[in-house]
Length: 338
Image 1: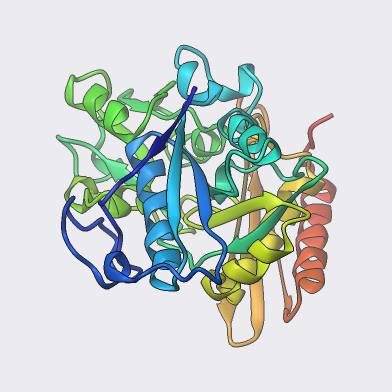
Image 2 (image 1 turned 135 degrees about the horizontal axis):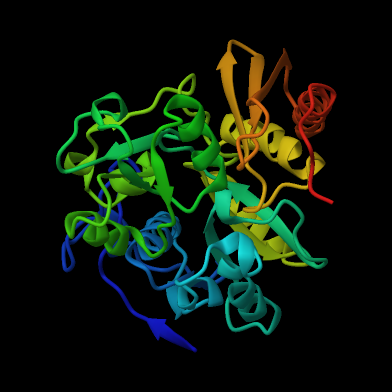
């Protein structure tokens, strides 16, 4: 089910938290230009998804576009009693939005890039990758300041296989239990005492103004982030060249190159939410350093790591770097999806 949302809660491009509803911003006061295409954004209706869509809405309105939101509920939002790896993967969060694009009910869809399948369906394109927020994972707990402080056998919540294998490598004594739902639902379950701690993306907490819930942030050396984590991607139909032009000013080149390399690792490994795989890139001048890790959920073999670095100026070079690191993973014993 979808419904058109007329919302006034707009996000500043520099501020990680949304402006309170009803507040006036420069973006809100911009008069739409009749020469620019009006845009409907398909979005999930979770608070974080709406923040992301409203963030893009405010940036496009500031450039003179008339922009509305089409709120939708996806199968990924509806199925909360099973892990994503058992019910079809993260594509469950984007399929309904793609149908809205295909049918012309919406023009663009804003996604957390780590939720976007490595291969888009035919006829769709990733038209823009925006500047990345904090890509790291956050340790959240009401009673403990860090992972090291957790007592032996403490229950930690996450439904990410990547986080599970990395947590097992850091603390094999912990009890890792599934945790589904939006950010608020996960925090509520934590507050109710179902878990001693949970692990969430730092970017989501920061975007929602929940900085105070972060007790510690894992370094990439401790817990390597997922491919695309912290970045927003905007999807369109492949034939909408007018939208490519409209979205170009929102793109961030270095973020796009980085996540292209990360996603190439995952794509080469057959990556999805059923793959316990991490990939993360960092810049040193014009050189992109890319690290990846693969683990066995059953902990039968040690964590496998790989890394590579190369000067990167194009998407093709970024993709090549990712493929090279994926090849290292396989050589070292990582097993890709069949």
